[in-house]
Amino acid sequence: MVTQAWIAAWRRLFTDEWRAFVLFAHGTCVALKEPGQDPARQAAVELAEWGPVRGGSPAGDMLVTRLGDGTGWVVACHREGVLGFVAADEVEPAASNDLKAGLLARERRHRDAHELKVIHVEAPD
Image: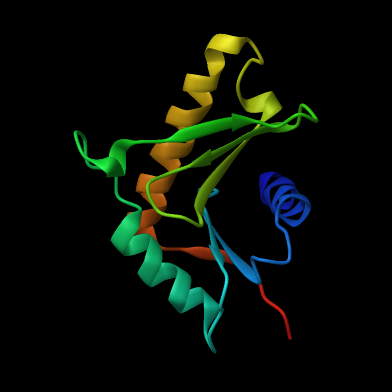
């Protein structure tokens, strides 16, 4: 199941600096350094503001990082903590496909920013 793969990836990737993360239906993750009482709502507000892609603006930018362990790519946008993960089996691993992974994650972020459907919350007790 894709959801479990996404959750496992974020658990591996986050450090103690990021105290919580919220995963949305299409795979966008919003990491929170200071989660409040309702991390899901907090993340939804963040994604609604910073997630929609707007061509010709920083909202269309992306930073694609291929993971050294070969499991996929992490795709960052113009807002710290708003991230996408693309598994290695979703895009061929050729060097030119870093862009394809980035575009896939960006499209997912845009969809998640409009739908705001939370599928997993990971927060400290």
